[in-house]
Amino acid sequence: MTAKRYLFYIAHNYCFEILRPLQQVMLAQGNQVKWLAVGNEVSVSYFEPNEVVLNSIDEARTYQPDATFAPGNEIPNFIPGLKVQVFHGLEWKKKGHFVIRDFFDLYCTHGPATTSRFNTLAKQHGYFDVVETGWPKLDELFSTPKIANVGNGKPIILYAPTFSPALTSAPELFDEIKRLIDTKEHHWLIKFHPKMAQEWLDKYQTLVCDNVEIIESSSIAQLLQTADIMVSDTSSVIGEFALLNKAIVSLNNRAPGDYLINIENAAQLPAAIEKAFLADEKLKNAIKNYADDLHPQNDGNAAQRILSAVEHMLAHGKTAPKSKPLNIFRNLKQRKKLGYWKF
Image: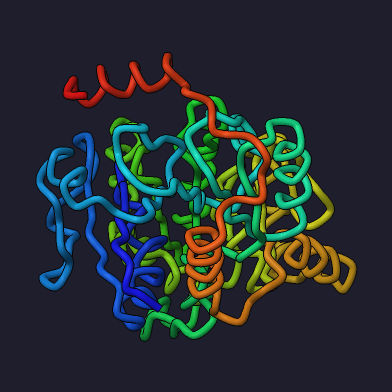
């Protein structure tokens, strides 16, 4: 098969973990891969020496990729290539997950929970295809080792709240988490979303002590493997943790199911944590059923399935009957946002 040119279009640091497994299989099969970072929320220091980074939209257009991949919600039409959505998280309950913005030709879904909805949307809109591939970020999750020498034998809690002001548990749980930390009964690992408000980053930093670590690495797989339970809210990382068949305490989850120990106020946190550590068979079965619906293919080959789906579309075209809409208004917004007015 003729080598292809692929482009990764990124606007946030979380994209690295999602796209690198895809880059690995692409390069292994003789394809070219280049990255284009837009906006000011990507840390250029995260790029590895062997990764090819384009410096401008003009360079991306000159590159003429066969397909462009985005974990985010947008790819402007002046970026060439088939537009492929790989998603930035598993949490489909968040506002906007099923909003169709007329940017993408192919949606690579994770499991029945999302595939069925996107198949319905594909029939309604008629211009994009849907293929259930799994999520490339998870390809290394199950083989990633735990962090060595953490916790001094204490049970380990991962606190991973979302950043959204409407959904985050960070303000409400702060005092109770501080109190629990002071008991020294657990070892806490705290991982914030890259977009968490600075106010809460600073406040939680004051809690760091011998049984509290705030992890700033872009990778979360090792944290998920290392923790015994998780405390969160409506964060997308809940789904990733559930795939490891571990119990999760959530504060006011947007759509709580029986796989979660959902609480409504901070005072309920200690009892919920105790219940999570002593998860019964009913809870364990609920977690497994949820995980199977969310992301059933845990063989580490999601990236390869995405690449195969893209190669098939490049070779045979879309099965969708309609052409993609011009999407003039949103693309003008993209031009303004990126300051790009060349046609």
